Length: 633
Image (cartoon, rainbow, N blue to C red):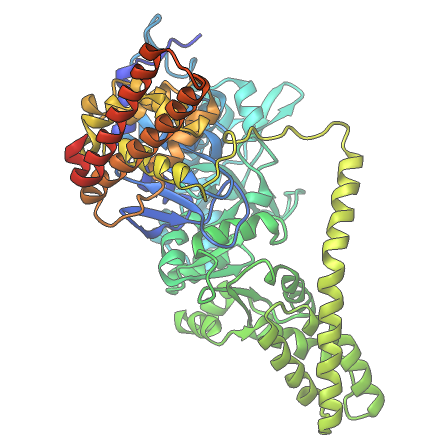
């Protein structure tokens, strides 16, 4: 069993890997003010960014779903890794050698499963690349050359070759220390009659990488007539590879997608290669499955889901391609981005187009795209003979649901009018009638939607054998409309984000000065971590580690990331310290007045004097704070 990773090495990994660099591997980040960055949350589906990253604090927090933490937490939660697996992965990226407290460390035996599978894929990818240069791979090199790809292109995309023998890769990876169980789990090998055998044999190989660039699977193309397998064979579903959540080329395209706010979706590996080599470097493709909801989520995080972004689907011009293009209409409503269609001429795919007409033709294909709604209407209307009244009526009836499905009201009306022109109707009365029908159908859909959604949720609940686990709330509810809670929150944010501005005064504030129970718990954790006076580079980590539970830890993370509500925290700090203390003084004054009232009409002189003396002192202290501000503390 692996020993415990030393604390100083964990700290070294945290310090060496900037959180914004890690998060940017998964989603597009933009300035959010106050030094923070924002993006669409990868932990829940949203259209407006509520996910923020604080590079200076090394923390992230989503104000929508309350997920938060540091760099290690982010990778653990998103990639479903254990703590040690996460530290090992980030340490490898940073070039840090980890030390273990118990019995040293044996690479290959003590790593977590996911890290082992990643390492196996990395070794396999290198093996396949090396095989592409061998004599047996001549057929693979010829295949690439016939499609316009030279050696440099193959190297850029990591294309390789799987030898035709039964167990070349298996024997190679065994020599690297991987077990048959690991090779079977990874999908690199299959179970043969005499043990593990290579899954891919005698095929051209493309490595499939996740958004961070890690190889998680392979796509393999048949090259020989005597190969009885499918034309394309992909890695099966594994702990690493989920085809519904993978986009080929996303690792190469993500930065350009974020920069240009455009993604081009093509249909195959060679199409992605052709597009990138032609200068369309935002091209990506699904891997053996239709473009679906999980693919939409990946793109939305990169595009920031803003109205200026665009997703372009390319399809062959044949009937099957046009049918696939119309299916894309169903996914369009999941984007805020505009969706367009680019139909390749003559039934050619982008790879064939580049080969026949050159790089410029691929660029023209994308630039000549058609808005998806317009394409869908043209395709539907084209099925009918609109030279007849019957054809016009049938075309309108068929197209109305498509127009009504457009969520943007102004755009919906414009396409209703465009439909009128497409079918050849010239009567203003009929045009108005069609626009009214579209609006009525859209209203009906919007009214029916919530009811149907509720029914679907109810059905799903009934079908489940057990209810899903409920997420622990972030803590007791706080009333941020309360001036007391609001100013307490601001002081804690200052104590976590700018401890030097509230030191040493903050350390003299008791837990009872924070009336929100979660805030009192955060104040206790700050004290347990040594207080603001002794804040150093590991201060925030100590505070989070000393939280009594996940709810308080989440609150600490939220307060450490949420911007302070003032552009000049150094001027603001004293004001907030005074306000919190004044609220505490007022509460104590009220308590003393109540105590005095309870003494009755004939109070004990000594007790009455003690209460009056404390009350007088508090009144004087409050007056000094109001006059002198922070100097009166």
